[in-house]
Length: 135
Image 1 (cartoon, rainbow, N blue to C red):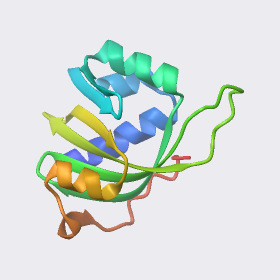
Image 2: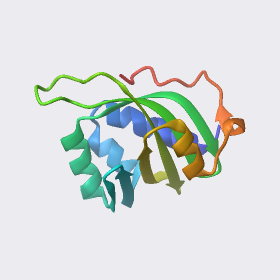
Image 3: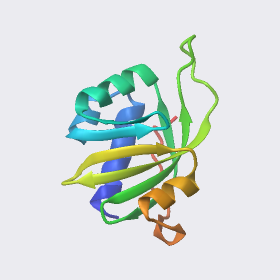
Image 4: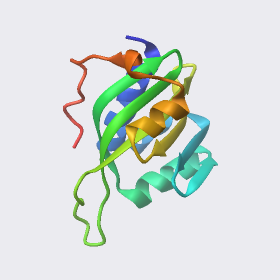
């Protein structure tokens, strides 16, 4: 397994444990964070997004080649009452640089993420790798 893959799994663990300091250490200072509302850069944006979204991402499937990792995820966000909402299918494209996440862009589904990441079914990494601390 490549270092990009391991970095992305560690990133998910830090996110799901609300370990913002660890998450920032696993991300470049100018990390790109994006989704359906657009994208921006920087560790302050990442910190704000994590605090505001209250998101948890369960890793379901992983595809990787070189510094690009696509993750099929079950995402949950905190509702106004503080409870986690029902999981939603999402997928994200991660790009790593020197052992850190340089970009994470969320997509509505796995097909869109694979296309954006330039990966395909043949790039899937088979378990066991599941992060049991997710969701």
